[in-house]
Length: 399
Image (cartoon, rainbow, N blue to C red; front, side, top):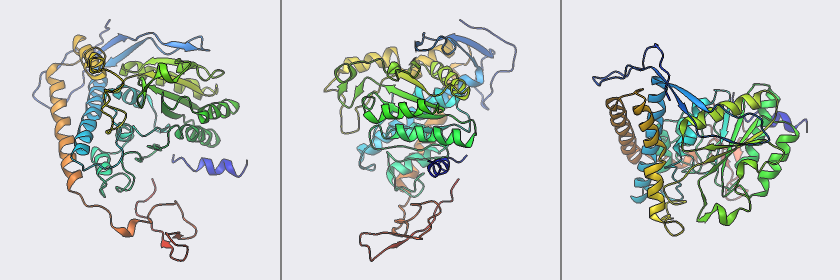
């Protein structure tokens, strides 16, 4: 055990209320709101083994509102671009889109600290960007080009960044790894919390319950986040799960149900989770109820197991971007001109990155054995034949 602990540690690098503060400003000729702050009610949380949950109201400054809206818009635009690139056959292999689920990632990221870590499944493009990778770094990785965050060698399911551990292609496998990240946080004593995200389709995996057990035994600062988008591939939650209360699946681990279509709810829930875990109480389970507009992957039209009317109803009544937009406009936190300016800027940024991601070169064959290990002691990597090893090279310096 003593030998394993340091190794695990190495995984880580380190209604409205108005006030008189100055409103957020974006350099332009648009009209601005004169209101600086508003408070919004949040849909009640459901609690498991908790006497008190997250805040049931959220206060937003004008600056907060603009930043959250922009991040939501960027994620949606990235996924639109990704879908188009796939249809053009420029993105090959698997491609899983996050459209509809943006409020989960954006709200969570708004609450995370620099010391916290995140690991998720293969629907990871938006998370990668939020954790510090540029739009170009994401799209170039999807197209297999050298400007990708993994030098084009990982693709859609294997994107990484500082304190962001993917991007994992095996269903549910990232959850025990997330417990390991939490183990490292505790061992190092850095005060960090690990967030391990998975879908409702992975929620019945045995390895999740093994990870729950170990995390609680050692009271690890780990938040297990189930992004319940209603369908595991083409199977609805009602057909796959005897219990669809995923927030209560931890049994002896407390849990929270969150409206995952509300960016303010996900932000407040994450703040609560961090406070809970850093107080030494151990792990927590959060269920984010959300919805995906696309099929499971690009090869799935997404209409054989649900109706188009169902998808359209969610778009019209619960879309995370339009509903947030309506709230901040109705509260006079922002103006339509400001949001239009953001939309224009986001469109330009993503369009330019898309164009570059299509024109960049791929890496050369000399990088085939590059960056496989950190501090590789043997200096060589086994090739297709034991007698013909490959020289290991470091291409990108470790953060």
